[in-house]
Image 1: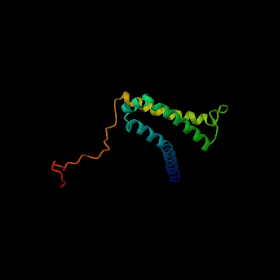
Image 2: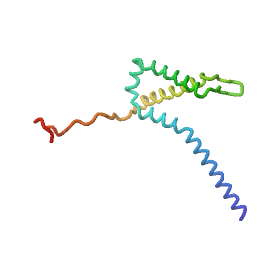
Image 3: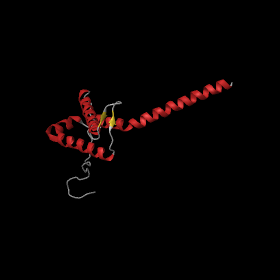
Length: 138
C-alpha cells in the first residue's frame, strides 16, 4: 500500500512539474503570441502595404535602429550564440528587432495569401437621425 501511495505521489509531483513548465512556456511566449495575433487579425494589410511602399518603410527602418540602440543601452550585454561565437552588444539587439519586424511582415504576407482581413470598423459617430429638416431638435 505504501508503494502505491508513493507512486501516486510521484505522478502528482511529475504532473505538477509539467504544468509549471507549460505555464512558464506560455508566460514567456504570451507577448509574442499577442504580437502575431494583432498583426494577423488586427491590421488590414491591404491598406498597409501601399502605405509602406509610398515611403513609410523609411520611418520603420529608423524605428528599428532606434529601438535596437535604446535596448543596447538599457541592457548592454553580448550574446553567446555557441560556446565560441559571441555577437556584440547592439548587433544582437538589432538582429532581434529586425527578426520581429520580419515576422510582422510575414504576418502581412500570410494575410494576403489566405485572403482574410479584419472587418472594417468605423470610429466615426453615427449621423443624427432626429432632424426632419425644419431646423429644431426634438
